[in-house]
Length: 109
Image (cartoon, rainbow, N blue to C red; front, side, top):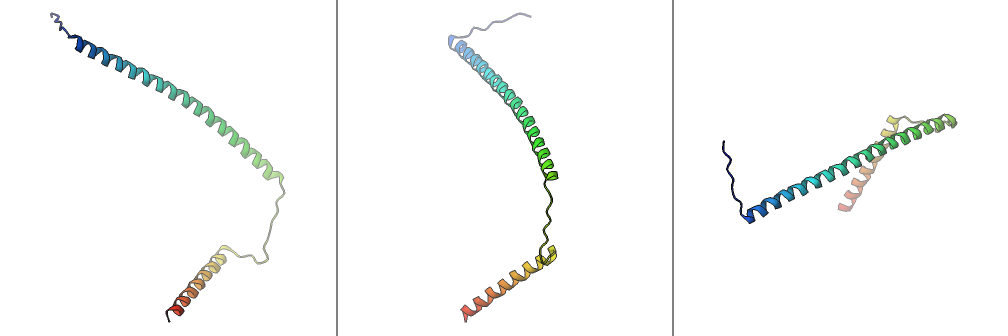
């Protein structure tokens, strides 16, 4: 196998060097951004761990406060269960709709 050499013009030589330098610059910039990303991810992990610890402390404090505060039970004079409340709300809304329709009929006549 014989080696063959190709002569490059000065313009082609400059073009090749320019592209090589631009590629090196792009690669170094990408490495810089990647290192910055890794640093930010480490900081994020540290902050997440700190947040988890703080939340655990707050939950522990809340459970302690919940245990130490006396419980007070209020009972209303007329206890209604959820179904009765819904029925009352439905009848009120139906009555309101009936009144509105009656008013509209009165304005039309």
